[in-house]
Length: 290
Image (cartoon, rainbow, N blue to C red; front, side, top):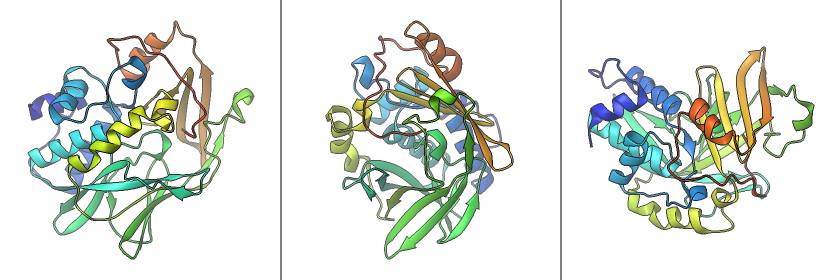
């Protein structure tokens, strides 16, 4: 595996000499704008592999994306290779319909220490919940970014990540009641502890998430990619583009339905993905918002 190949994959050509917050932010932003958050392997009859070599081959060599366990593991490898002091952490994702956090540790995120300050770096949540900059690990502080206002809160040994969202305008009235729309202005995202993890801690969950009928990842095919002004999402046959803050405190959310013949073109032109096997798009009944 070659760090230069990773740089080329994310289009990163800036300075690599300083292990500072500016460099970390720059790498994170290049990463999320080049590497989609997606689970398409599952819906092409292939596995979501967790080995680093397999992830590197999928994302870097074959120009694909992946879900959090893959894209954040690759980011972990890249940051540690560069020289950042980076730790894997495990998260429990908030389930809105159930009004509780997942019982299993299903999310991988990263903690990066820079000059004695700790930051959360996460390239693997996607959609409109994706941070665009590392979050300083400080409790109760609003941290405004382009997508929303993020807030970390510590209670005991547990940290909670929440967001405060804007209003949203949907021009296509047919989609006003879409189950893909986030309805909450204040949104809980996930919780985590600062206990260091290894990739082996996620192996059983990696298998469960791509096999279980109860998993949102088997219920829905999805792909999302950040852009300089917003985020593109494809869920089943529904393509959306959210433009953050297109006017004061309002996001613009555009919907359209694509047909089966358009899927390949959309993946190529919007997400820069070419699949080797046929995708069977799926929009099941598990809760998943964009």
